[in-house]
Structure formats: structure tokens, C-alpha cells
Figure 1 (cartoon, rainbow, N blue to C red):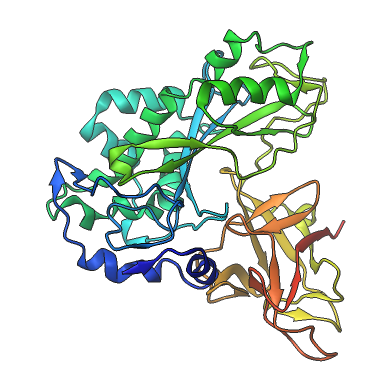
Figure 2: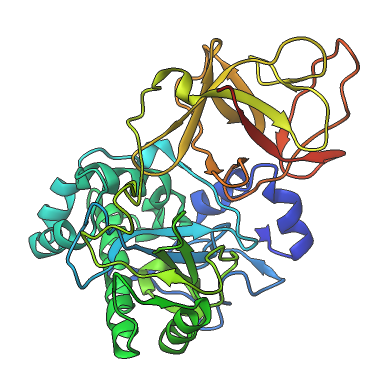
Length: 407
């Protein structure tokens, strides 16, 4: 049994929320109607209860906020001229943070073959509408399932009543994503209100959000690029019962948009704002490209920096890190000691790290975040020759991790 009171949730969030689920998932006995668990009719909406929920095949936790994300890549043009493309279905925690790569045993590497086996028509649709910026659609799909899909507790094989067809949960994730995507026709909703791509006309944030809120039922998050060009929409939902039941209710965004209040461009695909405009998604290859990616990790409002082990040090030389952006948009860190990760929420770099953690990075503020959390902490400020661990989340001494370019 797992307690979902607000206090329990907050305590568990920065410890190991997924470990909290293991016994409940392992012992769950689920009656099903086809593939959908027969959940009690009084099952609460995700993130909306303060009582105990015993069957985690009927209640999504900790990722109780479901985001359907869509992109508008205009330069270079990706996808149809009159369609926003699907990007993913993300299970965020109730406070807007999230987990990633939750269950390595569920990871797969050939999504296209799995989809084709179950529904060739769906695969064809995905090739047209679920697009990767670099043209490797299958790699994007693999990343979305392994990073986000494996975090849905209601898609665990044990939730299928003991007789799951191999990789049926993988297929279900992509099928449900596309089902929800079709119900959120961003381009059509905006066009119906006279908001269409234009090289000359601009729009206000209020114009865009009011239309999308009216049509979707809640205010989504919108994101603009550095030229204030409209680029992403995230639709937030709570979920009742299993993800397999697809019983969503829209909720307002948990993330504040940084698009300008006015002057937002909605560019036709294939167009440029200026002749010197960089692509809307400037994702370099995963390999470092020399000193261009080199820099230091400093702590906001605190002395010192991070050394090569990932510990906080206030005396001596800062370690040189390399910040590398992946084609999926996330960032990895490494230094001369090796790759960097969060090990039990503690920042660590070394030769023992085989798979780097995927961070997010805000180029304007130069702040790094992990799973939607941009607060890091330590037990204390280190003395002159002391090395102190830093961890994700709140603590005695709190700060943000900031990137300080070397060049």
C-alpha cells in the first residue's frame, strides 16, 4: 500500500519514488477487460487524492500529469505544412518534475518493427507525423519510449492480467499517444481563429493561449525559440485509472511560458526570419566539438565550483566540463574523469558511469535542471579543503547549477 498524501509525496519525490512502487506492482492481481484493467469506478484522478491507493495498475504514480507534446519545426521544415508534429507522451510528477529511463528491463531498440507487427497503418501515420529533427524517426521513438514510456506504472506487464503479448505495452504507448494527438489538432484550432503561419504577421501570447485554452479545455504551455517564433505546445492532463483506459481530463500548464507577450512569429515551414537565422532546433551531434562546448559548473550565490568528481570545492581549480546537446534536445555532461550522472540523486562523474544522465539546459539563464527540477543542494558549504556532495532537490544549502562557458 502506498500513501499519496501531499506530505508523503514530497518526502518520497527526492528519495526513490519508483522503489516505493515495487511491492505494489509485484503483488497486484488485475482483472482485465481485454487489455484494460477493471478499475474501481471511484478510482481518483491522478494527483487529486490524499488517501491510500493500493492498486497501481489503476492509478498512475508518480507520473500523474500526462503531457502530449507537439512541435512546429519551420527551418528546416519538418512534417506537413499544415500539421504540428507529435513528439511524445510524458508522465510528469504532480509538481512538474519527472523521472526518466525508469525501467531498463522494459527498454527496446526496434520500435518500428513492434508497431508494424501490431498496426502497419499506425506506423505509416507515425512516419508522417511523429518526426525527428535529424530525420531519424525511429531513434526518436526509441528515445521517447525508453526515457518516458518506461515510467508509466500502469503499462507494466504485470498490469495486463498475466497474459501480455510481447511488447504490447510498447505498442499501446504509441497508439495512445497518437490517439490523444489526433484529439489536439493545434494547427486547425489556430487556423479557425485566423492564426496562421506568416512571414510578416505576428501574434500576442494572449491570442494564442486563449484559442488553445478554449478548444482544448485548459491552458497549455507554449514555447518560442530565441527569435520569439512559436515552436512547441504541451497539453497537460490528469488521468483516471490506467493509461490503457485513455480517460484524460485537461489541466492548466504547470510550466510558465517565456514567449514574449507580443510579437510572436508563427513562421511558415521552410521560411526564415532573417538570412542569418539558425535552424529552429540547433541540435549538434552527441560528440563534443572541442572548446566550443567546454565550461565550468558554478553554484548560484555560492563560492567555488564543481571538480571532476562532481563534488563542490571552494579552493583550487574548477574542472572543465563538456556540455553536449543530443538530437533529442537533452544535454549530457562529461569531464576528464568520465561521464556524469545522478546517482541516488547525487551528482557524480567518473569512469564507472556507463550511461550519462540527460539534463535540460536553458541557454538564456544558463541554468541546468534535472527531471524538471532546477534546485540543487548540499548539506553545508565546504571548508577550504573540503569536498562536498551536491544533490538534486531541496536541502540545507540550496542553489542552481549554472554553466559558465570557458570561451
